[in-house]
Length: 82
Image (cartoon, rainbow, N blue to C red):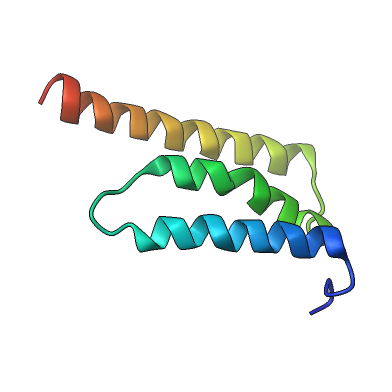
């Protein structure tokens, strides 16, 4: 409610909700591309409320890399070696 007068934030929220609605409505297959597609919007949504430090940015990037690596290993096991 604090951002209701900020049109840019409202647009970001609407885009995020539309992408997540697409993600939730697809129940027969999981596709990480929707999560990755909405990731930058999630960062923009929390930016006004979050104080970024170098440590927090490093931990965030490390988490993103770990998640991408785990998805890569999952798909290698499932489709290449499975």
